Length: 66
Image 1: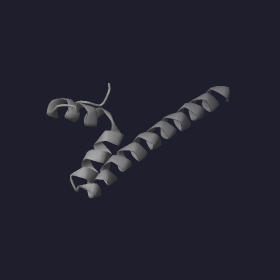
Image 2: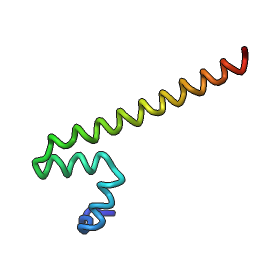
Image 3: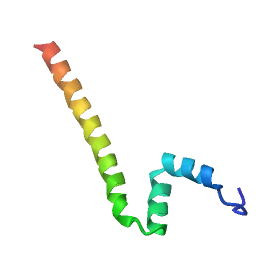
Image 4: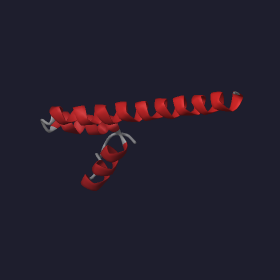
């Protein structure tokens, strides 16, 4: 907690797998900035899926009112 030790390899991988920020930093530090676009696309896709689910939910509610 005091910043004296960094995560070990396996812990760093687990951290990167669960944190887009950590993964982004790792990609930049290793010279793979171009792969960061894949992370951004995944986040955009998740947002679009949520928006579409919301639209379907609203459409279903509207069909029930008719």
